[in-house]
Length: 146
Ligand SMILES: [Zn+2]
Ligand SMILES: [Zn+2]
Image 1: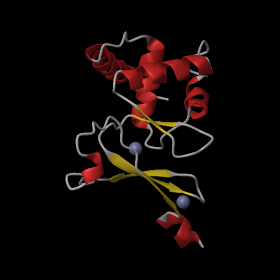
Image 2: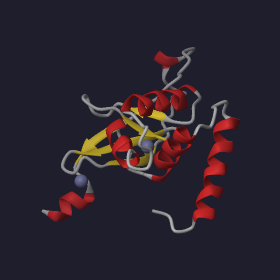
Image 3: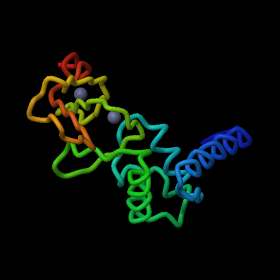
Image 4: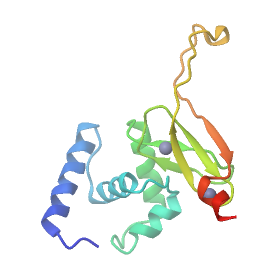
């Protein structure tokens, strides 16, 4: 939907370089998927990403989206969020942060989370490779709408 074709290409080049720097071959589909993921703050699912891009990329399949996301996760530039039992959502923000899921509108919000584990005897000597912090409830917008 961009009217500025040159600017769009420049942005894609930038994403391509970023993928290359992270050891990922920057194919057109990968660039488009990463761009979409980066631009949407909504933590999309495979279906959401597929539906958003399939008009632009007629050769795209859900399997490609899924496999591409898997590559991103393996290379550490994306994260899978399993806040729902029945759907996995994806995030380009890979620093430690928590997720709040609104049970009314299904929106997922990022929040800063800094858990002090130094005094936690149980984890002494353990190596932590992944942290996920999930909160559930009703967001401000939904409770105000009541
Ligand atoms: Zn809500
Ligand atoms: Zn997030």
